[in-house]
Image (tube, rainbow, N blue to C red):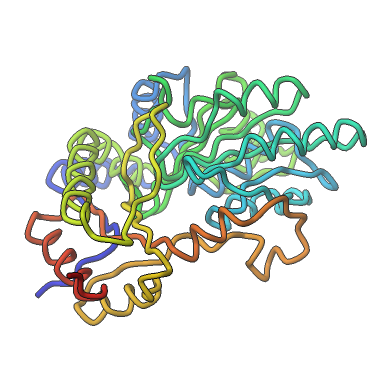
Length: 376
């Protein structure tokens, strides 16, 4: 049987046609008609003014934090329960990631802990230069509380929506809820450009400046003129062509991932000790990954499940290891920790790709049940 991967690329003839169009046109560089079109189409899809196509989501985070004023010696508040790139971006600017625990209802940044942290920092005259939210596994954070809190203290918010394209919060698209937002099109995301990302912002000037910095900060002169430090962060026309094809199929990919998620829920609904990542009623997740939880009383850990599924040629992963438990961030300040630690200790990500057939899902379920203690 073929291997089942966690979240593999899902491409088809539309992507091939657009890639060949880019190839045949000889627009291979980090500019071209597909880059312009992809930016416009993403902006239209999420309902924002403009967008900047970039080499990665991490590049987008790096630029976004710089755009809102983060610099050397600053503090940046980051949720601990996320992929490391969220915090890496702050360090690229010489800033210090300051970690905060998750709230139980979404596993995203805890607004209560954030409120306490900002109040204490305001008293000490040490407010962070930015707060980064993460829309974890494709579910938006609690923006009803986070955004007013940050506005109260004049702290800008960057939305890491790397995993959340297609998700919504109170009817608004993920990525557009904060001052600046980013998406990732890495190979495992809900749509992919192989490697790539996109930055969107409320202020069109942020997008204009992101494009400028991402193109090595080259000035409009005949010779090569540079007044600032820039980066080679622009997306190639080839990858943008692939992204345009992927975006056209996004509604179907969202529907299929939702169906895969519901199939898991139905199969495991009556299984003692097995739960799912909590879902907030405030938004609609994109179900990028389905994450189950395993009660420790079962005597089976996520690592046990992953090893068992691997023996059946099925890829699975534990939930994110919190950043405060990562050696790279051992010196980072941390507020709270039990929620993120429990999610890591009990959470297991199941294959969730939009190309999965019902038979694939059933194969995962059968293997998963074999990893769990017998019931009855």
